[in-house]
Image 1 (tube, rainbow, N blue to C red):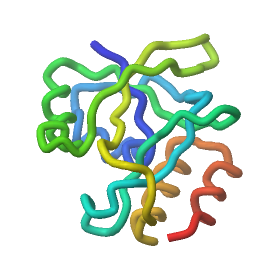
Image 2 (cartoon, helix red, strand yellow):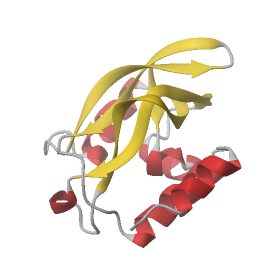
Image 3 (cartoon, rainbow, N blue to C red):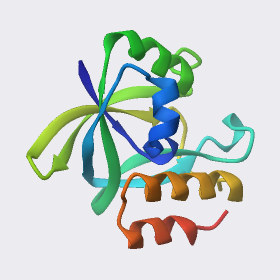
Image 4 (cartoon, rainbow, N blue to C red):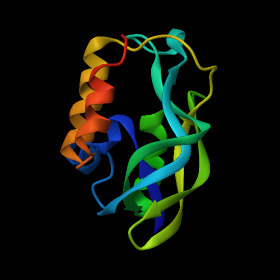
Length: 145
């Protein structure tokens, strides 16, 4: 199994159970020194897509999944790795048990552009359902779109 740090829409456990049905949720944590942003406006159907970028003094809430080998290809297809939309990247996640190495998907595009209101609402709902702190969820809901 490999450890995947889900952010944005993949924080929704119901969605992840369809995308990676053999991969259990392990817990939650934070990507310290990263921030959630948007980019690749021309790549999405509804505006810019979620990604993360390095940013001191920032944090991104994540859900950690033990991804089974049989689910890895499915996740890559869903995230558009073969289409060069996202790529995998290794990060360190801070959890209550300490620091854990994991991988994330990062957008292959420049930062910039606005997400649609519907997409942003889905991200906020996913963060809330995963147990993100109220202020984190509210910050998502107040973002420009």
